[in-house]
Image 1 (cartoon, rainbow, N blue to C red):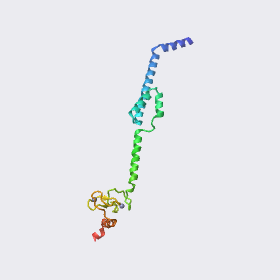
Image 2: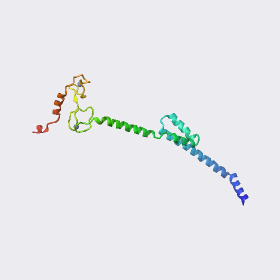
Image 3: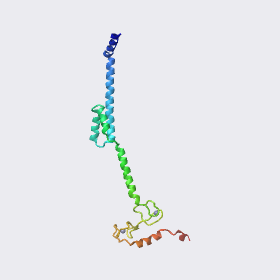
Image 4: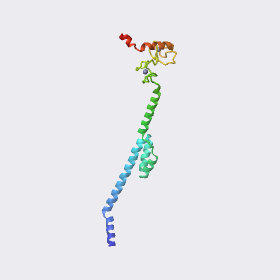
Length: 173
Ligand SMILES: [Zn+2]
Ligand SMILES: [Zn+2]
């Protein structure tokens, strides 16, 4: 029985079946090896900006086979580039929101533009405008930087703010 089995095994290896199985295995290993290399290249492109480093990562994904991919996974950047960019944009937007925090109407807290002269919601005077060129002026400015007209004192500013609240009842009466 044993020699028969040996013969069977011998026949199995001697026939083309073994060669086909071996070649198929080698073929699939090679395909898997190339897929791993391609995956490393794709992954590196999403994580690394420098094209030279991406190339090096792709080579590492292929050589040494499979082990290189593992080494790459240990040392690859933890974040995708798009996530990093998204976070940077979020931080920028947050900073803008923080710097804009002061630009609210002191009376009704409505959001106002730096160029607004009055609050559009409650008509509170936010800034004085230049007598000559009508540009909005900062509170501390002594002179209009656009046309060199001296800025009038604050008392006049208060006097100007009165006609801005429209006396509707007087008009209707
Ligand atoms: Zn207001
Ligand atoms: Zn001016």
